[in-house]
Image (spheres, one colour):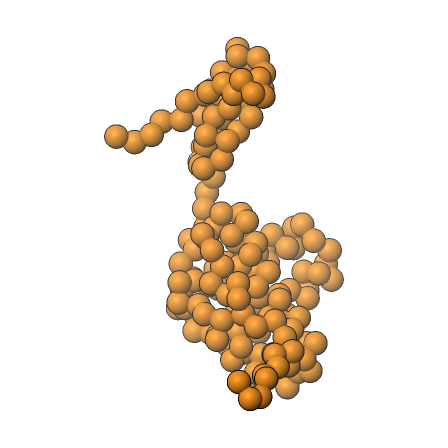
Length: 158
């Protein structure tokens, strides 16, 4: 039987809460107002989610958000890197198929200095971290992409 969210009272905080989409929403200290707010929340339509199957769709959604919420220079910076990366991967590549080596191969194919490579990797990581924070995907497939290839040192004799 599916779970139906119901308000509950937390005596330690003297507040009413409801659990929606994995998060506890504060409804306030007054029971009557809390239930009014609860009914308002329950009548709201579910947020529309984008199709998160394709990696390029996530990058497009990030760029749309960036254009609306960031300065034009910041948007252009991300746009340049996202477009370059999306041209380097197959258009049909899903988020689940995306791996750190895709990012590494892309930056290695460029004649960039180490700072440019690091910035490009961070830009692409930022896209997928944003998607995690907003709930489009569960976890970033490239959270552990190498951020600065030349900083990796090996110890001889081990």
